[in-house]
Length: 394
Ligand SMILES: *Cc1c(COP(=O)(O)O)cnc(C)c1O
Image (tube, rainbow, N blue to C red):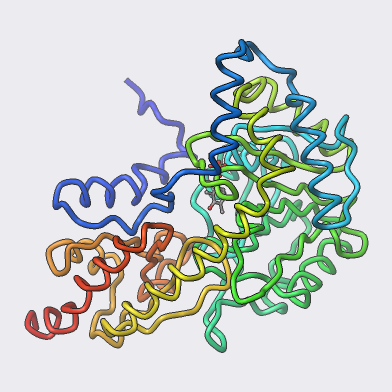
């Protein structure tokens, strides 16, 4: 038989997340690899989902999404960002941000079109671009004054005649960078000058620290009309298993994405939509508490990692902290993360897997801090011996 998997998807075998999670289970290690919280979302929102199911809200909702959720999304955009989106025609509910990204790329990019991504990038971007038969062009984020940043000249140089879109992700997974207004302006300028679409993954929009504000790129001059803004309840309300996301975009872009989406999933789960509609309007205080709690967890883990001997890069948002492993005497993050369970009983993710040019991320390892404080403390305690273990090994 012919090789079953189509050629353009063959580079996407089993993800490193599956490998590392299996490793954590097999070795009984603390899993700071995959980024999902180990506590629940707001009780009021969870109760709404139960009510919706008990109340018979269990059949296909409308393709674009339940009206109550589309209205809540529009209200929330206006309230937080001053952006006006029409719930009828400019909001589309999706099966998480993952479907939003994939269907946006599939709907908007012809085979051979180029999509610019910032590496290290979220793993689903590369697969979505390949599925569309499009070509990714990576611009590298490099540590600069303690945070990951890009060189605007490198961004401009990445644009060619076939460039169709820039996939923006701020707050950025896996680096924790929150793009500044100047950085977003540089991206926006390139989009306007070359008539590009910004596909903007903003799932960590509310999870920023130290008073750093998330700025949606759609709020920049000339950008609302060319931006597909993507959000998800998963990260905002700690329900990654609900897979409820949405896009906000002008009618022509929304309609294009909906045309593809209706044949991928048609619609998204009904009860979660009612519950998330409630949460967007009424659970912002809970989200503010989550943000503060996460900031504390970040600080706790950063302290532990620094004490263990890593160089720690301070994230301004997301669930993740990046470390440079070279001060500990290691050079390859993949080798280290495979050894880390036996060295310290902790699992992490080698950042190099998020690059087109892995050598640029060889010495970085990503740790997730969206875990209960006692888990982070225990991980820190285990990692404290890593320096000694590493020296002993050599
Ligand atoms: C978690 C995550 C997603 C996926 O969101 P879902 O709503 O679970 O599909 C998308 N983008 C980034 C950057 C993420 O970290």
